[in-house]
Length: 116
Image (cartoon, rainbow, N blue to C red; front, side):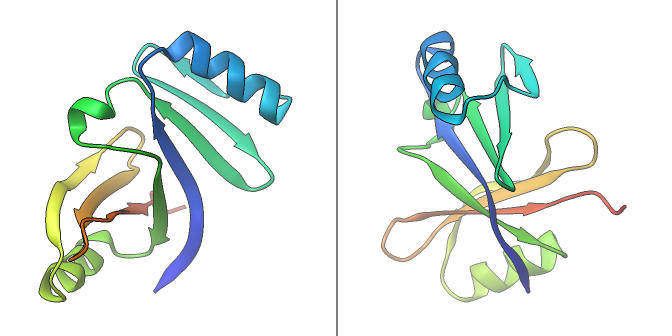
């Protein structure tokens, strides 16, 4: 079961230019501003900029489905024919992400927030 698409991560080559663009678009400063990730929150969405995304295989923006059990969801996706692009990884604070390619090569991200 998912809680919907609440996060999208953009791979960027020039983090400063991308940060300026999304600051102008969203009309807000980032809540996270690090050399490895810049994050914005807007209208219930988490918008991230990843300067290492291209080297991780990201070919465009990746939407992340928020799930309650990332390992069970990943197993179900693999059983349904997906291929692992990134296994479950803690990206800080207990937030877990993983991604797969579907049969058509589309990138599907899944995300589990830490238990409240």
